[in-house]
Length: 337
Image 1 (cartoon, rainbow, N blue to C red):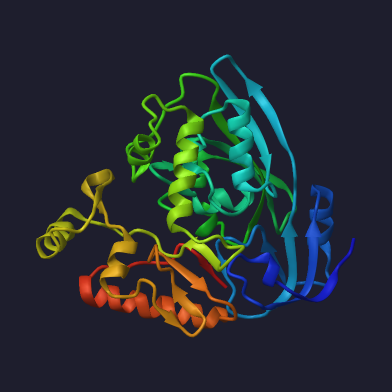
Image 2 (image 1 turned 180 degrees about the horizontal axis):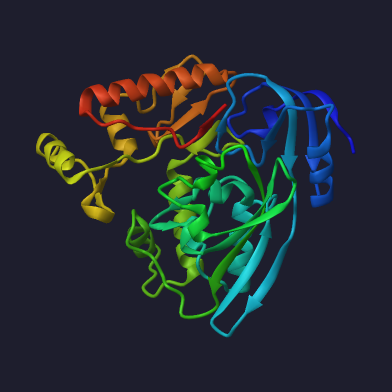
């Protein structure tokens, strides 16, 4: 077991924030995970997966455990469906590409989301009308205190909008080691009605789309407005789209008749946070090396050497201005450390 000291985490988070881990170890197996959790010489431990949904604002005075568990296997299969078990260290988009190669449907709308499998249930990742919970069967997680593997079904995960049990009551208590998903082998339920998917398909002359066509459309849309973390530091959407009550929505719409909105459950409405931020004049603006992306105001970026604190200060300034102008509170989707 190789534990390194004073390691920069710049290459382990998609924002490219240069903070230091006091100690660092890469976890490649369940037995190793247990051994590391047992180490009494390192009482403080910090779990890091793909680093795609985290903003690091300070050095980590702990043993950083980088979860790199790999493997995809079929759990059970019928003529109609297949259940696959995916280890926590598998890259999400590479999993989507693999599923498309097999002809499995269900993940196509979630193409090009950054990060690894282990953090997908924590966030209940979603895009273009689909969320992880729509294909989720269960996950296995190691309880940190007992080092026992615990199974969580969908009900136990208590999924919400970019939310789950693991962000609330279970926060800091479990390490997700694998996730089981149920995908379709035929008669795929295609979801083309959200965002610009139908427009992109039409542009490409696609009348009867396949799951691959939808994935291609989603990738094209995301690439057209979301920056590549390899080129400029970011974590994708920084804020959640706020969901407001019908009463609040009616007041908001009266003052902002041209604002985009989407009806959701229980008579509530979702307002695109990017639109709210853009109306406050932040789109494309730069504050030192911290900034707001020029094509999508929902994305905060690191132009080179921004600190996590500088990006957090910008995020808080945006929150204040949006609430002041629209009386709507927007909350971070990104985990702030």
